[in-house]
Image (tube, rainbow, N blue to C red; front, side, top):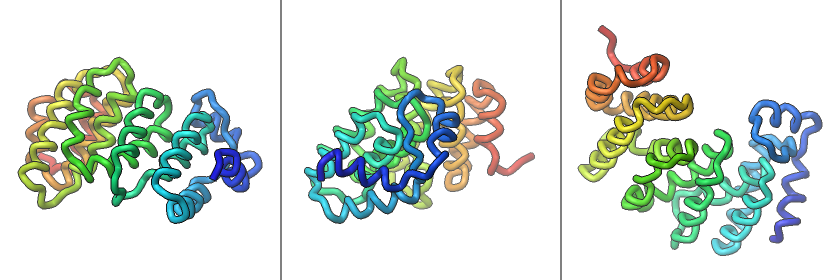
Length: 227
Protein backbone atom coordinates (compact mmCIF):
# COMPACT_ATOMS: atom_id res chain seq x y z
CA UNK A 1 0.00 0.00 0.00
CA UNK A 2 1.32 3.43 -0.91
CA UNK A 3 1.18 6.44 1.36
CA UNK A 4 -1.36 8.12 -0.92
CA UNK A 5 -3.60 5.05 -0.77
CA UNK A 6 -3.36 4.97 3.00
CA UNK A 7 -4.20 8.66 3.35
CA UNK A 8 -7.16 8.22 1.00
CA UNK A 9 -8.41 5.37 3.17
CA UNK A 10 -8.07 7.52 6.30
CA UNK A 11 -9.91 10.42 4.65
CA UNK A 12 -12.89 8.16 3.99
CA UNK A 13 -13.62 8.42 7.70
CA UNK A 14 -13.76 12.23 7.87
CA UNK A 15 -16.73 13.58 9.81
CA UNK A 16 -17.67 17.18 8.91
CA UNK A 17 -16.90 19.65 11.67
CA UNK A 18 -14.79 17.25 13.69
CA UNK A 19 -11.40 18.58 12.55
CA UNK A 20 -12.00 22.04 13.97
CA UNK A 21 -12.86 20.66 17.37
CA UNK A 22 -9.81 18.39 17.38
CA UNK A 23 -7.51 21.27 16.46
CA UNK A 24 -8.90 23.44 19.24
CA UNK A 25 -8.66 20.62 21.79
CA UNK A 26 -5.18 19.31 21.01
CA UNK A 27 -3.73 22.76 20.22
CA UNK A 28 -0.57 21.49 18.47
CA UNK A 29 -0.18 23.13 15.07
CA UNK A 30 -0.73 20.43 12.42
CA UNK A 31 -3.39 19.25 9.99
CA UNK A 32 -6.42 17.56 11.54
CA UNK A 33 -8.75 15.61 9.27
CA UNK A 34 -11.59 14.90 11.67
CA UNK A 35 -11.55 11.10 11.64
CA UNK A 36 -12.82 9.32 14.78
CA UNK A 37 -10.67 6.85 16.66
CA UNK A 38 -12.87 3.76 16.07
CA UNK A 39 -12.52 4.23 12.32
CA UNK A 40 -8.73 4.37 12.65
CA UNK A 41 -8.77 1.27 14.87
CA UNK A 42 -10.64 -0.73 12.26
CA UNK A 43 -8.44 0.54 9.46
CA UNK A 44 -5.21 -0.31 11.28
CA UNK A 45 -6.54 -3.76 12.15
CA UNK A 46 -7.19 -4.49 8.49
CA UNK A 47 -3.77 -3.20 7.50
CA UNK A 48 -2.01 -5.35 10.11
CA UNK A 49 -3.71 -8.45 8.71
CA UNK A 50 -3.01 -7.67 5.07
CA UNK A 51 0.54 -6.30 5.11
CA UNK A 52 3.96 -7.78 5.72
CA UNK A 53 5.88 -6.52 8.72
CA UNK A 54 8.40 -4.77 6.47
CA UNK A 55 5.61 -2.96 4.63
CA UNK A 56 3.93 -2.01 7.89
CA UNK A 57 7.11 -0.42 9.22
CA UNK A 58 7.60 1.45 5.96
CA UNK A 59 4.03 2.72 5.89
CA UNK A 60 4.07 3.68 9.57
CA UNK A 61 7.22 5.70 8.98
CA UNK A 62 5.68 7.47 5.98
CA UNK A 63 2.41 8.19 7.80
CA UNK A 64 4.28 9.66 10.77
CA UNK A 65 6.32 11.93 8.55
CA UNK A 66 3.17 13.55 7.11
CA UNK A 67 2.59 15.15 10.54
CA UNK A 68 -1.17 14.79 9.98
CA UNK A 69 -2.84 14.06 13.31
CA UNK A 70 -4.82 11.01 12.22
CA UNK A 71 -1.94 9.72 10.11
CA UNK A 72 0.31 9.70 13.16
CA UNK A 73 -2.33 7.91 15.20
CA UNK A 74 -2.72 5.34 12.41
CA UNK A 75 1.06 4.89 12.26
CA UNK A 76 1.15 4.05 15.96
CA UNK A 77 -1.85 1.73 15.73
CA UNK A 78 -0.26 -0.08 12.80
CA UNK A 79 2.60 -1.11 15.10
CA UNK A 80 0.62 -1.76 18.30
CA UNK A 81 0.72 -5.53 18.56
CA UNK A 82 2.03 -7.86 21.24
CA UNK A 83 3.58 -10.52 19.03
CA UNK A 84 5.93 -9.16 16.38
CA UNK A 85 8.93 -11.21 15.28
CA UNK A 86 11.47 -9.86 14.58
CA UNK A 87 10.65 -6.50 16.13
CA UNK A 88 13.93 -4.57 16.16
CA UNK A 89 12.90 -2.35 13.23
CA UNK A 90 9.58 -1.61 14.94
CA UNK A 91 11.28 -0.68 18.20
CA UNK A 92 13.84 1.54 16.50
CA UNK A 93 11.10 3.38 14.62
CA UNK A 94 9.05 3.97 17.76
CA UNK A 95 12.13 5.23 19.63
CA UNK A 96 12.83 7.57 16.73
CA UNK A 97 9.37 9.08 17.08
CA UNK A 98 9.80 10.04 20.73
CA UNK A 99 11.81 13.26 20.20
CA UNK A 100 9.02 14.51 17.89
CA UNK A 101 6.21 14.09 20.45
CA UNK A 102 4.37 17.36 21.04
CA UNK A 103 0.88 16.41 22.19
CA UNK A 104 -0.49 13.86 24.63
CA UNK A 105 -2.81 12.01 22.24
CA UNK A 106 -0.13 11.24 19.66
CA UNK A 107 2.42 10.51 22.38
CA UNK A 108 0.10 8.10 24.18
CA UNK A 109 -0.75 6.17 21.02
CA UNK A 110 2.93 5.78 20.17
CA UNK A 111 3.73 4.84 23.77
CA UNK A 112 1.12 2.09 23.61
CA UNK A 113 3.07 0.60 20.72
CA UNK A 114 6.26 1.10 22.73
CA UNK A 115 4.79 -0.70 25.74
CA UNK A 116 4.34 -3.86 23.66
CA UNK A 117 7.96 -3.79 22.57
CA UNK A 118 9.25 -3.25 26.11
CA UNK A 119 7.16 -6.13 27.44
CA UNK A 120 8.47 -8.30 24.61
CA UNK A 121 12.06 -7.42 25.56
CA UNK A 122 12.28 -5.89 29.07
CA UNK A 123 16.01 -5.29 28.69
CA UNK A 124 15.03 -2.38 26.45
CA UNK A 125 14.30 -0.40 29.60
CA UNK A 126 18.08 0.14 29.60
CA UNK A 127 17.64 2.07 26.35
CA UNK A 128 15.07 4.48 27.78
CA UNK A 129 16.68 5.08 31.18
CA UNK A 130 18.32 8.30 30.04
CA UNK A 131 15.04 9.71 28.76
CA UNK A 132 14.31 11.18 32.18
CA UNK A 133 17.30 13.49 31.70
CA UNK A 134 16.04 14.86 28.39
CA UNK A 135 15.24 18.58 28.11
CA UNK A 136 12.27 17.48 25.96
CA UNK A 137 9.34 17.10 28.35
CA UNK A 138 7.52 14.56 26.18
CA UNK A 139 10.58 12.31 26.17
CA UNK A 140 10.74 12.40 29.97
CA UNK A 141 7.04 11.60 30.12
CA UNK A 142 7.37 8.70 27.66
CA UNK A 143 9.66 6.87 30.10
CA UNK A 144 6.71 6.56 32.49
CA UNK A 145 3.95 5.92 29.96
CA UNK A 146 5.88 3.17 28.16
CA UNK A 147 6.63 1.37 31.43
CA UNK A 148 3.03 1.35 32.72
CA UNK A 149 2.71 -2.44 32.19
CA UNK A 150 5.03 -2.90 35.19
CA UNK A 151 2.43 -1.29 37.45
CA UNK A 152 -0.21 -3.89 36.63
CA UNK A 153 1.34 -7.28 37.48
CA UNK A 154 -0.21 -9.13 40.42
CA UNK A 155 2.62 -11.67 40.56
CA UNK A 156 5.75 -9.93 39.28
CA UNK A 157 9.00 -11.81 38.93
CA UNK A 158 12.17 -10.57 40.59
CA UNK A 159 13.18 -9.09 37.23
CA UNK A 160 9.84 -7.30 37.02
CA UNK A 161 10.24 -5.94 40.54
CA UNK A 162 13.67 -4.65 39.59
CA UNK A 163 12.13 -2.69 36.71
CA UNK A 164 9.35 -1.49 38.99
CA UNK A 165 11.91 -0.17 41.46
CA UNK A 166 13.95 1.35 38.66
CA UNK A 167 11.00 3.39 37.41
CA UNK A 168 10.19 4.45 40.96
CA UNK A 169 13.76 5.71 41.10
CA UNK A 170 13.09 7.78 38.01
CA UNK A 171 9.95 9.12 39.64
CA UNK A 172 11.95 10.10 42.69
CA UNK A 173 14.49 11.90 40.51
CA UNK A 174 11.70 13.89 38.84
CA UNK A 175 9.46 14.39 41.86
CA UNK A 176 10.10 18.13 41.76
CA UNK A 177 9.85 18.50 37.99
CA UNK A 178 7.77 21.66 37.49
CA UNK A 179 5.96 20.46 34.36
CA UNK A 180 2.32 19.49 34.91
CA UNK A 181 2.52 16.61 32.44
CA UNK A 182 5.46 15.05 34.30
CA UNK A 183 3.70 15.38 37.62
CA UNK A 184 0.60 13.82 36.07
CA UNK A 185 2.62 10.96 34.55
CA UNK A 186 4.26 10.15 37.88
CA UNK A 187 0.89 10.27 39.63
CA UNK A 188 -0.63 8.02 36.95
CA UNK A 189 2.18 5.49 37.37
CA UNK A 190 1.86 5.46 41.16
CA UNK A 191 -1.94 5.32 41.13
CA UNK A 192 -1.91 2.27 38.87
CA UNK A 193 0.84 0.66 40.93
CA UNK A 194 -1.11 1.18 44.14
CA UNK A 195 -3.79 -1.25 42.95
CA UNK A 196 -1.25 -4.09 42.76
CA UNK A 197 1.60 -3.03 45.07
CA UNK A 198 0.28 -0.63 47.70
CA UNK A 199 3.30 -1.14 49.94
CA UNK A 200 5.78 0.12 47.34
CA UNK A 201 3.50 3.00 46.45
CA UNK A 202 3.13 4.07 50.07
CA UNK A 203 6.86 3.73 50.68
CA UNK A 204 7.53 6.02 47.72
CA UNK A 205 5.02 8.60 48.92
CA UNK A 206 6.43 8.51 52.45
CA UNK A 207 9.81 9.57 51.08
CA UNK A 208 8.99 11.62 47.99
CA UNK A 209 5.35 12.61 48.43
CA UNK A 210 6.16 16.01 49.96
CA UNK A 211 8.23 16.82 46.87
CA UNK A 212 5.35 16.18 44.47
CA UNK A 213 2.81 18.85 43.67
CA UNK A 214 -0.35 18.55 45.75
CA UNK A 215 -2.58 17.34 42.91
CA UNK A 216 -0.06 14.63 41.93
CA UNK A 217 0.36 13.46 45.50
CA UNK A 218 -3.42 13.21 45.91
CA UNK A 219 -3.85 11.34 42.62
CA UNK A 220 -1.01 8.93 43.41
CA UNK A 221 -2.57 7.94 46.72
CA UNK A 222 -6.15 7.80 45.48
CA UNK A 223 -6.54 4.04 46.02
CA UNK A 224 -4.34 3.65 49.08
CA UNK A 225 -5.92 3.03 52.50
CA UNK A 226 -6.54 6.31 54.23
CA UNK A 227 -5.85 7.11 57.84
